[in-house]
Length: 162
Image 1 (cartoon, rainbow, N blue to C red):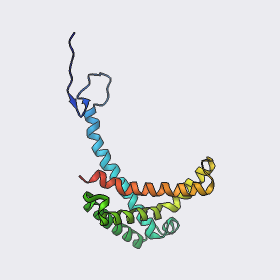
Image 2: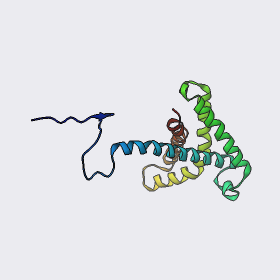
Image 3: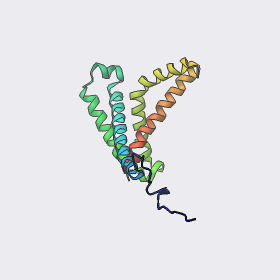
């Protein structure tokens, strides 16, 4: 009895002879790079919107004047500076104070922009589901907003910078 050997690439069989296969692993690997880049750019734009909402004074004020040039200008400027600093000092990581401060401000602006919208909605859903009492649900909701804001600040730099 003979054993058929197949070459491995990154621990996976290099090719498959399944006639019903629609995609090959190599195609998926190639597409993953584009998906990660596009999703990182989308998350960066979402973080920019959070900064614009924060500089506008909240969603209600932003909705009343969505084309406020001051809010958009400050949002774009702050996001550009913070993103540049995070990308420039990323190699030193959390040990570098410039990286920590820029990341912290980025997270804070995103929390200020989206928190007043998301946290009350999430609190109400958690209370309806009887997961928490109102106080615990509010604390948990703001925690979820903060962790999400951190992910929104970290993910683009992790995927777009080598």
